[in-house]
Length: 409
Ligand SMILES: C[S@@+](CC[C@H](N)C(=O)[O-])C[C@H]1O[C@@H](n2cnc3c(N)ncnc32)[C@H](O)[C@@H]1O
Ligand SMILES: [Zn+2]
Image (cartoon, rainbow, N blue to C red; front, side, top):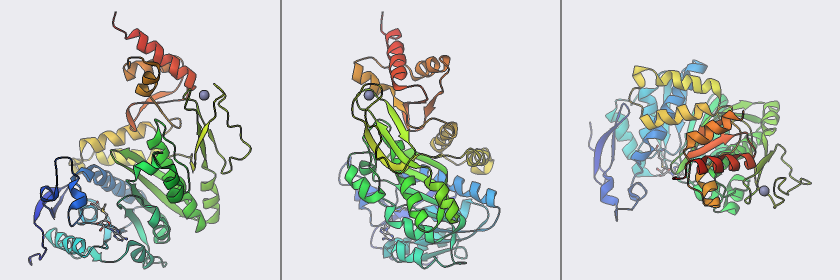
């Protein structure tokens, strides 16, 4: 294999079934709390392995469902680890097109392709992601699967990604701009996602719904509808997997899922309005009379699909995928449990903080709600979160009861 003429040191690591040359990250760290991947000359973040593990499983599950050879692309590829893993680990992949605006990233990606003997299957280009996607927007040139994994927001790439996907294609999106999406900068969220974020205890779910809503609106402009197959919020990012379905009717159907979440910061009450126009609505809390605050417009429809989760679990059970990280497995199992869960969730600690109570065990609160015939379940969004259809006042009372029962004698 020819040598690589880069002016920074690299080492070869193994991720999944691929050998990947990556920058020696420790050399770019300025202190123990510094984030080395951001400073390295080519991007590689070992912590995103879980995200890539789930992406590999999602792509295999999609391929199993559509049962044809797939053309795949990663327009912001960095060192190429994600796309190379798709080519190596997913069966039924015809070709993978990697692209990055950084010349050094492309050089390293090419080296990694050769390292994994994938020259016949994986190709690299070096241009702006939107240009790259636009070159694939014509019929017969489109992709079956596009994975947009940028720094920050994927909003800039939605239009061109939608145009570069064939009918029934799958789009995967990462967003790491959690401060705007989680309500720290709602005006930025409005600018990027055309919806207001809100700093509630369930802001990570709002983040996914804002991204999904933004995608639905962008797709609708092209007479395309969306159907969300899977989504998760993990550490510092959210991920969304959505089918695109051609046709004005599909777009109209998708838009019926748009609306608002109204939240009361005084008593934890929340309600949804499945309507793109909020005008004329009562914005007083029906429980305590305070003013409700709105998040949206955002996607109120399903953010996970039962059948797709079954496929993911089926693949997880195979020896072939035994290398998939346990944390990725845990996320998939928890998200699967949430397919029919009510919107939003409560975080026990937030409620206990407000009332100065010790925090009771999660299971006790869930059991109490179940014994009262409400739905109640854990959520992957938060280790101390509960999804339930009980009214906020009941949730608060149940948590108070459980907390008092756990007070030391
Ligand atoms: C978060 S990294 C990608 C990581 C990669 N997907 C992975 O799984 O390891 C984002 C990449 O986008 C590239 N990039 C930034 N702006 C771009 C643009 N306008 N067009 C194409 N690539 C771009 C950066 O050079 C960087 O390599
Ligand atoms: Zn209220």
